[in-house]
Every structure is written in C-alpha cells, then in structure tokens.
Length: 312
Image (cartoon, rainbow, N blue to C red):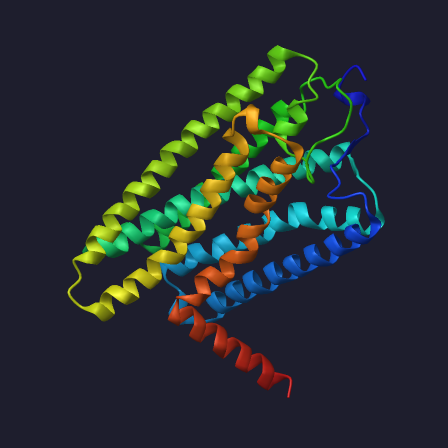
C-alpha cells in the first residue's frame, strides 16, 4: 500500500478470538449501550419537560447528556456488530467518520465540562452576579462555543490525519478508529510529526482547561466550607460533586489514553483505557448526576409516574 487512498478498509482489534466470548461481549456492550441510552434519554426528557429545571446548571447537563449519547453511539454499535458477526472490518470512509464524530463529541464534552465548572463557580462563589454572568443568552453562547470548538478541533485533526500517506498495513490496535492508532500506519515521519504536534497543542489547551477546572473547584469547596448551615452545605455539595466526579473520570482516563509513555503501552492496556474513557462515562454520568440531585430525582420520578399512568 503506497498511500491512504489505496486502503479501502481498516481492521479493528478484536476483544477476543473465542466465539463464545465474542457473543458475551456483544450482550455486555448491548446492556451498557441500552443503559446509556435510557439514562441520558431520561435526563434529557426530564430537563426539557420540567420547567423547574430550566436553569443554567440543567441546561448544561442536558447538553452533556446529548454529547454522551453521541459519543457512545459513535463507538459501541460498531464494536457490537463486529462481536456479533465475528468480523473486524470498518470501511475507510466509516473510519474517517468515526474519527471525526468521536473527536468532535469528546472534545466538545471537555469544553462543556469546563463551562460547567465555571457555572458552579459563579453559582456558589458569585451568587449576586449569577443573573448577569449566567443569563439565558450567555448560557446558549457558552454551550454553542463548546460545540463549535469541538467541531473545529475534529475537522482539523480528521483532515490532517487522513491526508497522511499510510503504508504500514491497515490493522488498528483499537476497537474503534482512533487517531494515535492510525498514525502508527504512517509512511512519513514528517507527516506523522505534524499530527503529533497538533495533538500536543490540543493537550496544552486541555491542560489549561484542566487547571481552570481544578482552580474553580478549589474556590468552590472553600466557599462551601464557609456555609454555616449544615443543610445548606449538604445541598451545595450535592450540586457540585456530580460534575466533579464526571470531569475527574473523563480527564484521568482521557489524558492517560493519549499522553501515557510508549514504554507502558500495549494493545490490551490501550483497549482497556480507551474503553474506560469512551464508554464508561456516558453510561455512568446519568447515575452520577441523579443519585445526589434531589431536584433531578423528583423530575425523573414524576416523568416515570406520568409515563406509567399514560399506559394504564
């Protein structure tokens, strides 16, 4: 293969070669996928239907649920199909689409989590300025900026990655099309380094965002500890811990997946880490947000009661 245009398909890494385990993986992935669809779908519906939840925090949570749905739908259905039909192939255009949408959604989610940290900071530390800093128009602009930044990020990386000549075969050591794995097939060291530099620039941007998130939550928890009422502290912590848990899970596994040293890299470890940062957060986030949030639990309870009543 002299260049990328001669590649018609890629071969994804199989979780196992044993047929029984492939079917077990299919049912496991199907359960995780349905749980993510149900959890995020309920959160989106509850927030959209309950006027009490039409606040900045829940507006951003609705956007997060949409991004989680898109993210897990980009990777897991193809992995399920490969496990079910005992195949490893994905078309060249299908791989490019998967790279684009995954990069778009995962980067937009990081930017949105940064915005959510700012939202919690303003709500807890600057409550008197909440109306001016987090008005409906400002919230829409911040959410649009997160989606737009993710789109531009994905467009740049996808265009650059698939313009690189590939001549090292077509096998990817991953269960979905991921940029670092495609770069391993590069013919040219200079082309490879161009995309590596882009990834490093993105890593610097995400590091700045991570520092902003950490500083925001440090300020938030300092403010929470000064609340005299124990009930007030408990409610405030309940509103802040879910976003913190979500962003911690996302950042730890995402950064480790892309920035871990080559000396500890292996197909099995890469597979596990990518699964943890691309599949687990979209499935776990709805549970994380609903467990400690009484307002959201009440809205979900009313939604389920209404649904059951309508079908009786």
